[in-house]
Image 1: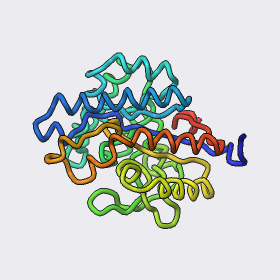
Image 2: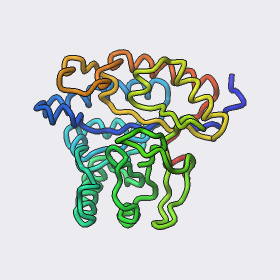
Image 3: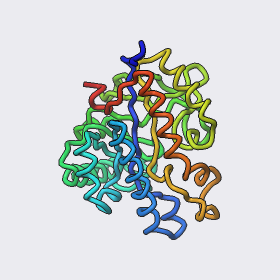
Image 4: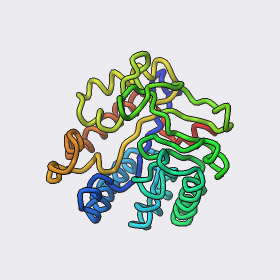
Length: 267
């Protein structure tokens, strides 16, 4: 039965990337393989439930498994750009270097997917000049996480889509709990009780017309065997996360949420 919330949009996003910290710890093959293992679990679930998501993709992970792109495209997923590699840090690059790496990555991802990439999200939400992103032909940026996390996110910025005055680029923020600006995605989804996620999502639903969450493919695999080389929290809940995601998605769909890509929402 469709509820009164059937105009509410679910914008699921996946940062489709290699597990950078595993690579840094000396596991370059596992950094790719574990992420791809999680990818197949996610797309199996999405296809079963009719979920369309936006996949912010690195060129590195794309080149590792070109076949998955056909499956993503065929199931109605949006392919957007993440970076050339997840270790890219635009804060430490000149604008010229950032532009060149992004242009190269965009060309690779578009060639593999057959889709024009119109969306961008920077690794760790640390984007270069939005003017560069606009100049490269992107229509929107989703590198804003308006939750106060010391050392990671400033907690500043609007909670709704808006046009950046300087660049003219559309910015679509990740959703946070209104008022408190508590986070809802990624590690918090895995570590906190289901009740927290549903409470936070319900508050977003009461105040806005969309819920934008982000995850990584490696969120949905058991990384406990790498516990000694990963920060606390990276290995918690992984093996159960796909079941928790299914429960959460079914709960939202039963409420009448409509799943769509960011590009579809902005259009």
